[in-house]
Image (cartoon, rainbow, N blue to C red; front, side, top):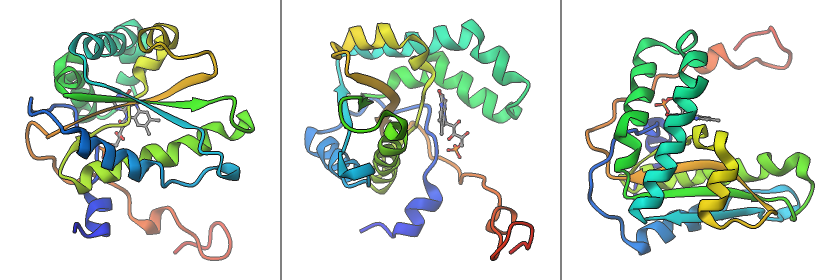
Amino acid sequence: MADFFEVVRSQRACRAFAPEPLSDELVELLLEAATHAPSAENRQPWVFVVVRDERRRALIAELARRAWDGGGRAQASGRLTSGLLADVEGGIGGGFATAPVVVVVCGDTGLGDGRVLPASVFPAVQNLLLAATASGLGSALTTLPLAFSDELSQALGLPDALRPMAVVPLGRPARPLRSPRRQPVSAKAHRERYGAGW
Ligand SMILES: Cc1cc2nc3c(=O)[nH]c(=O)nc-3n(C[C@H](O)[C@H](O)[C@H](O)COP(=O)(O)O)c2cc1C
């Protein structure tokens, strides 16, 4: 079994995938991990739509491209490092479309207080990402396709109560992922009171 801390330390966004298909058993195992996340009042307001159909996956990739071309790139280019910008560009330019499975994670607005809906859905997304990494898969939390939520909802036949909140491509990474870059705990944590440092 993969060491938990090794998984956490290596989990990162993958934006190019090998064409190898993923079994339903494996996808279900990842979703089971996702459903073990916490949620407010244990309402479990997550719904996962697993997309394998090539045309539907292509449409989702196209929505991301439209969002990127229609303002996402301009907004991001001043803020992202050139490396990250190139990575995202690679995902948009075809990398995401190579993922054999795309999971659209939705929040059920009919389950509980809407103010905590994202806080109750994203822990499940994180579990999904970690389970993917633990299984040797690449994954990414993406939101660009949500710029066209109505089209996405229509393509997936979502009822009005379901709000798409994350789009997660899954598959074997096309190439090994390097280690993620993160600031040390000492840059982010304080003892007792803010400003005391670590
Ligand atoms: C809320 C959120 C939205 C994101 N949306 C996108 C996206 O639309 N496209 C993308 O390529 N990456 C997206 N990412 C991935 C981030 O770019 C990535 O997590 C971050 O740059 C850290 O990179 P790493 O995971 O490779 O270390 C998103 C991440 C989060 C948390």
